[in-house]
Image (cartoon, rainbow, N blue to C red; front, side, top):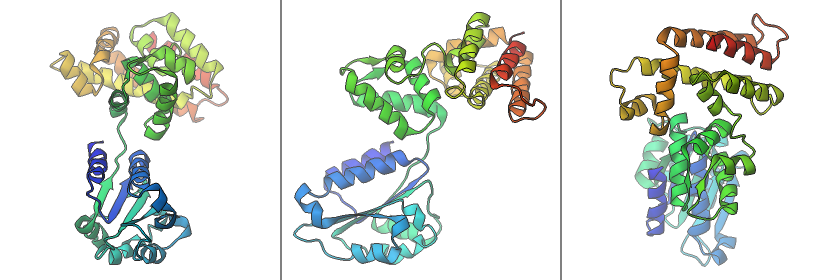
Length: 334
């Protein structure tokens, strides 16, 4: 996220604000910025007396501001980092008494995860005047693959589109979890190397052949043998391949195929833009649309709704997830 980079670069250049209020649904950037401040504002020998970490559940706004108003000891600044500050949500507005006139020698960092303060109220306006407010927004599914590619490129690596998609489908949109796995791969992979599906399978444990990405592709190609191999694997490994995830991803896939049918401009660039997919995968949708006319796509979406209800015990008691998936795919491909 460019805004996070700007904050880090500004601190590097010596433009340090007295308050950093880091809020929002995506904790990854909140942690990254607060960790950077913890490691870079003060010299190591200054931190013992001048760097304090507090936790929202164990403190109060009065205690935070009391610490923030004291002067640093034998240092130009002191740093106070309040983690899990969202636990102070009921009293957070009272911080405005401090943010109206913050101590210039204190750097107060509020890590307000999974929530955000009301932009109409005094605290938001006050911090806007005296400090920095950063909102960390959770990425959409289609934004995570490009994020992985961009992150690895900045570290001297590349990744194939299929490998990036495997990570997204297995790990979801949790950037912290994804970054942990990327760091593991970097430890065993030389720079200027491409991260491949084979590397991910060997080191993270995601099968390159038996996953939801390959299942969608096989369904789109009407490759019955491959579909049955994958769903048999899923049935044998239900914990790693929950039915609810497969249904959700197949619903999104057929919704995109339906959207493709409705496009007047079916050029590669426009399809990628409208379907919000990597241009590398556009050919998969072209094949799927050829194999599934609009009527069959609509039927597939209806069957997915029915199977979702059955998986929750509606109209199908004591049926295994593996059997539900097999029944679903037989009907979709017939």
